[in-house]
Amino acid sequence: MVLQKKDFIEIEFTGRIKDGEVFDSNVKKNLEKLNPNENPKPLIFSLGEGMFLKGIDDFLIGKEIGEYTIELSPEKAFGPRIKEFVQMVPSKLFSGQRLNPVPGAVFNFDGRMAKILSVSGGRVMVDFNNPLAGKAVVYDVKVIRKIDDLNEKVKSFLNFLFRRDIKFSVDKENKKVIVEVEKNLSQFVEMFKEKFKDVMGMELEIKAGEKEKPKQEAQ
Image (cartoon, rainbow, N blue to C red):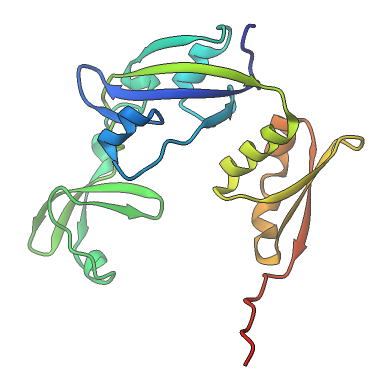
């Protein structure tokens, strides 16, 4: 069975720096080295749709179900290091958030991970490059299966888009998926309608409701 673009597949994977340590995995024995308290989770994604590393996507399209060792150059992995991403910022940006910038610490700046390189007076040198930028990496990938069940595809794609479980139903006759979300999230979900249709070939219909109120205990 040859894997094609837009196929949903489940994989086990371990990523490591070439000739170096493991940095990501969903295989129990390797994940324990990174975080002993974290349980491995299955990874299901659609090939060629930006749900996983592009270099892995490009490699797997046209391959059979099986096990592969995939070596990626920095350009095909996490990109080259960009010197302009190393910036000096005022320390008040940290103190205003009650954060203590010390060399080696990593913070999240509006979705961008940043590593503190040095602190001098009222200035902090920050590296906004991906920690793996400029590094060649190796992925050991086992393609477990191709996903054919529509509900499983929809669930995995919704989880990828919104990082949470979303209640949904499938209307195969009218080629649409109805999702139930809180009213305050409906506009956010609306932004992904075109992407959903492109990947799933189905319309995304949003059913917005009020946020569920916590139940009051009887007096």
